[in-house]
Image (cartoon, rainbow, N blue to C red):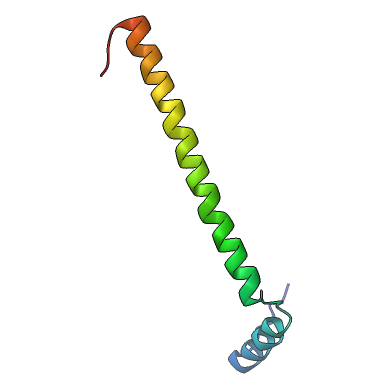
Length: 67
C-alpha cells in the first residue's frame, strides 16, 4: 500500500480550483439571511421567556416555592 504525496504547489493549485467552484451569495442574499436569523433569534428568545414565566408561575402556584 503506497501513499502518494501531493506537493505543496500541487495542493495550492487544487485548492484554488476548488475555491473557483464555490457559488458565493450575493449581498442581497446575505442581508436577507442575516435579517431572518436576527428575527428568528428574537422570536425564540420571546418564546422561551414566556415558557419560563409560565413554568415559574406554575411551580410557585402548585409547590409554593420560587420567586
